[in-house]
Length: 146
Image (cartoon, rainbow, N blue to C red; front, side, top):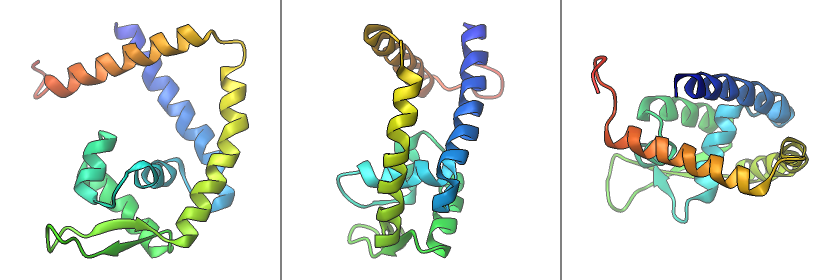
């Protein structure tokens, strides 16, 4: 399991570097693209805290990225009828255009990565990763203890 975790860390690093290269011409980074993706797939506008929970990230890290996206006009904040201080994060037309362009760039990249791989193997790997994520969510490591 330790070797799998190390492989996942290494894969994550390579995905971030490759993702950065893929979307840099759009004014995005992998982190910005990831946040735009979370906004894009959400059925309703969400505040930063809920976006962060959905992404499995800290509120502070998502808040920092939202701040960058806001400063560059990719997102805007709207009033939240359920909470005065927790504004809703919404993509602007510029953000939607960049997100759609990123998805167009992503398609051939994903196809290249999947080339020659067995569909059942991909599904099994996805299920394994999802199981590990769920276990971590149910019993997070704190202070070196499980």
